Length: 267
Image (cartoon, rainbow, N blue to C red; front, side, top):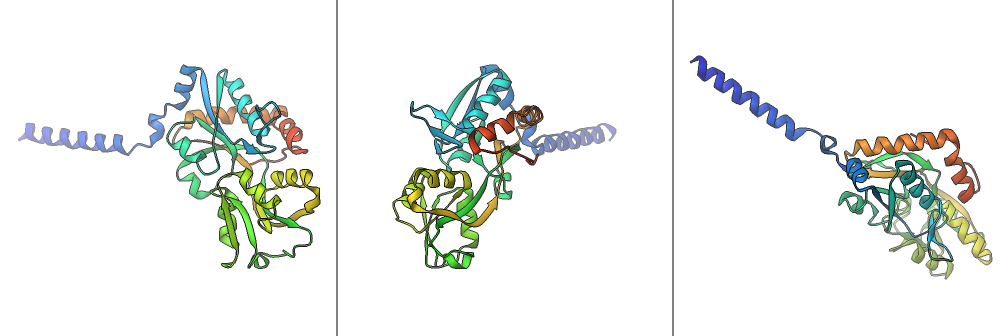
């Protein structure tokens, strides 16, 4: 009887141990940081059509605040960097499928996204708003009724606009930011929902449009996206960001590309 009790007890303990292992969070199996350091290369997903955060220069090389940050993180980690060009719609899937180690692509943090990926501390300021010509009467979201608004599919401004726009708003969704901006500049839509920095570029390049800020959609600083449960890599990047805030490097990047310091950013 004693031996049978011991056997049953042993089996029960083994079952509990097994169940515990299977229920452990994925962070116990995290490999991203080790893989990066072993390969001496980090793959970072970036946009290529979102000035001044990421865009192609006259030499066709990517430049912008996000590009500088991607290079900065890689340099501080002592590894080479591969910039993987993505769109707003597929940047998170690229991270989930491990095609990218990090996403540095004007990524805002919200509860839905936090369910599928993790985030570092914020690295730059950003906010989304609705913009239109000065002579267009838009003083509240109710004024969007019956008006056409361009937005990039899957971007945070798409999500926020959908929440507040009247049912009769004609939301025209485009696959990338270039198409969204082009539609607005060409007069295909009355308004555009985008980041303030992008709107600034539109204003600078197309003064004849008399574009101005109309409605705030969301104040949303940019965060770096990390694979779900990859705590070692997230904490390593957070160390780099904390030092960059302390020594002023983050403010320098913001001044270079946005014309003002980054200021207080959430951790």
